[in-house]
Length: 147
Image (cartoon, rainbow, N blue to C red; front, top):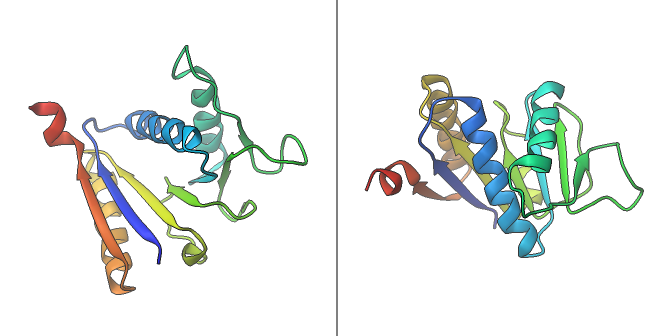
């Protein structure tokens, strides 16, 4: 069954979400996992793509936007809207929507910042996942960082 993980993070802007996504993608890549990052739009997907090149000086995470790059895609793919990529183990859902094909993923990660918009979307996604019977884990990083 698909595992759902919500990461509640400090900060109230979209860049905080992108930075956390990159940290978690780095971890997934080093665990040899394949991931798909779903964004709202092309601009958001390009921001994640660019940030993956620069967020750490000592790290390289092979990635590309869906439909670009080599025929053998790298382990990290980034897309938006209906732009779907080949099957991946992990979905990083940075989108306001929940894709229809969520059961194909072993794990779905939702990153929720402290902005009211992000929290509202997170609550809606949480409710929809729970209605579908998924087990949901919450990682409250706002408390960890304050301590």
